[in-house]
Amino acid sequence: MSRVAVFLFALFASIFVVLATPLPAANGTQVELEKRVTHVGRGTWFNVGLGNCGKWNVDSDPIVAISKKRYDANGGANCDQWVEIVNTKNGKKAYGKTRDSCQSCTTEDLDMSPSLFQKLDALSVGQLKISWHFMNKDWKP
Image (cartoon, rainbow, N blue to C red; front, top):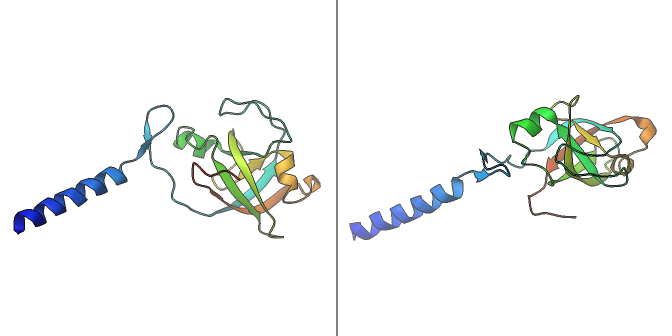
């Protein structure tokens, strides 16, 4: 009976180790994916173009730039990942696709395309207090 118990323990331990292994990033390095954390920071807008993820966009696309520090720390692994953003003042919610990095942003801030920012408030507001989090990698609106 103890052999069966040892076998089952070893089997479940092996499965746990495989599931706990970090996923490889696009460039082949391993990174820890961020747990679902709600960030609170500043939301601003910018005119998009060729983003740090290597893809072209236009101002009417729902684009997000994360902080350069966050982008560099995970090797760009958040490229093409959707983000849920909430304007904490009025409760409006929108979704944006990560396609760029923002040099002047702190790790809690997001820079958004004009069309995405306008889903939360008028461009003339300039900046918002937002809460946000990354959606699952395979999630799409």
